[in-house]
Image (cartoon, rainbow, N blue to C red):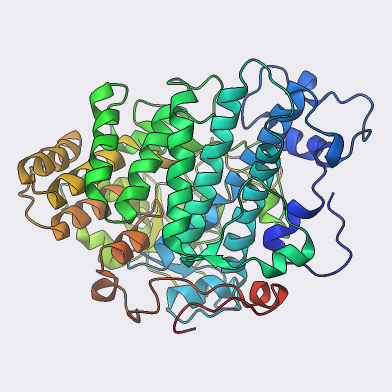
Length: 506
């Protein structure tokens, strides 16, 4: 538990008084199933309990392992980045019970969001919570030596790079804190670092982590070398450093470690989620629930339940909250022969009509908008439902980076460095997996279209359009020189003493 005596920025909350021995029981219990530790009872043993404070921690290898679990814990909040990456784009609408329900998502949907937005503040503070936990490890990295320490620190560096990548793609310039905890006064004086400096730190962390990461994860959910390479290549791509990105992607491709899964629709089922295409995913457990009052506390994936069909009764699916609804325009972007259309977008009326007893199937329409379509990748299905609140505890993992994404990013890097034939080869390799004809690749528009067809509803679309300068062409209400970035939460600016400039236009 963290005790704070006066208001401080939530982005430093976990840095100020974080006591791993006071939080390790909750963190370890939450992640025990998520990371599939071989002996959860052993992992949770602390004797005597509550005997150490923060300054006397990191005295045993187990202390470092527990702190690393705490750093992994904040990956669970990734569902929110996925939602916003789609809702802010032309792929989906916010949906839900009403326009007053989760107002922040509806504001983002209409490009009317400002600096007072609960969802954006959560992105800001949850990622900084993860960074704070990594920094606590790195601040104490030299306390002792033990077997496996290099890999542990490499995993921690990857996590910090991931959290900073999420922050800078949302907010641009952000405070850069590395290997230290901050006091209240220091936090208020910490400026926003230039985005170029944030990316430099991301690159440095990933480059440092790659040599010490395992090729094969030692435990389900652990970071691997390929995951760090893929994120490094992506960080270069987001900076338009295509020549730097290209050899990183090519090393993954030429390793032969990954392959496109033969059946695209199987990628989105629980039984097939550990497949040849998975490079990095966030592990979720359906056995430990959270609450609507603390979504970051969840150990299940909130996405499938929130995306589910409202008050649905019928086969295959479970009822849910009708958020993040695909648009008719997205559905029509797919060729009818493309099997990715139905794997990505559930046409609810067509599905019902095709069932043996359609009259027995019912569902409700939410007041927050209805398109007739649902996110068929991350949706509540019968047989994939967790407990106790199955709207919040799906065990379905979020696929952060998969091999198809790497192939398309490599195609983009080849195209932008003048190698159109290789770009076309990689794009058509992705299309061949779903047995549809190849295309000619002549411009970034061809790459973006294929990325949309392959990766829709996975959280990439808005950021793809922004980084390529195409957002105003596709997103209604998008204002250039403003909406490329989201606003820094106003409460964080206030708590930092008003010293941060807000992003332009807000």
